[in-house]
Image (cartoon, rainbow, N blue to C red; front, side, top):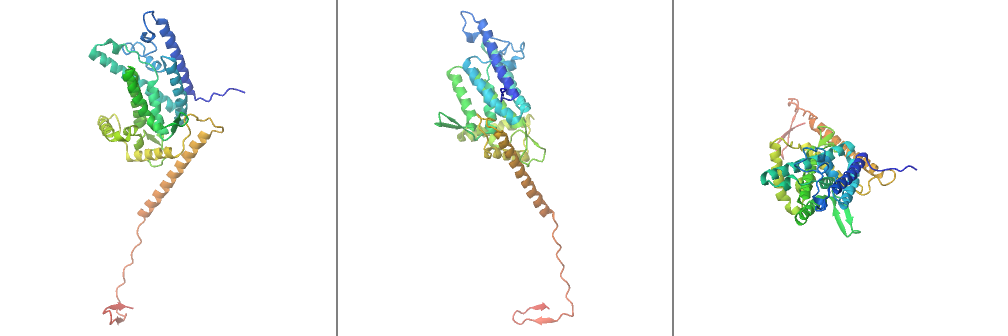
Length: 360
């Protein structure tokens, strides 16, 4: 019986790249270790991202994301790519998942390089220019944002049910944990990369990624630009206590980006369609993140097909109701017959009690 590998192609390629780049990095770093230098201080500029030297090795903007520094980081990154990549690639397709990966890998690395070069120009510190950036922390943050969009109400149980956390809370927990780790263990570059991955992923999914429109409320086509739903707004990534200040700040930045024509404002139809699809995702009972496609007979695919069918039927019903209402409004009112003129042949009948005359 042939061994069946139940991993989508792009996820498989990402896993191979992660293992290969990490092993090559470790081998190269080990070969450059000097008796007086700890392993962490040995740069490998042709596989890890060093801002001052990246212009000579442009491919490091991709390879540095897959180069992990130690075994524990490699195991965490491998689990992220395997389970997260498998779920997202099946939900979006290989083409859309590939675009998403390129965006959340390249943009954080490019922005981080610019930030550290500017810091070097201001402070003239070689630490900023020669800092070694590597690891999949940006991908991990980006995947959590994608899960928040797709399965926000899914609950993850830890320690045999003692701890239950909903997926929609994971991005904020991950960001706060990296900030604390950056301050305590002096891993601020990783914390900055985590935030860049989070912001890049949210901006791409919110404003740019194309998705199928199954709600039927959008008359502009069968696809939607971004996700304009209220539950995917930036403020909803944070606790309810800070929704107000975060929403005000996010709206100010959004209005600035719209005025600079970097972002295009959402139409009313796009907002309604996105809200419909967000509600459908919350009510459709999506499968487990850790067990996609594991059941026989393609149960996950059947559930997705049923969800799409229910949305299509709901959209058809809404369109029929709207068409019926429009026809009733557009139908002309029946003409009111004019009252005939009184004839002289009709006798008058006198009503003594009412004092009025009627025609018979």
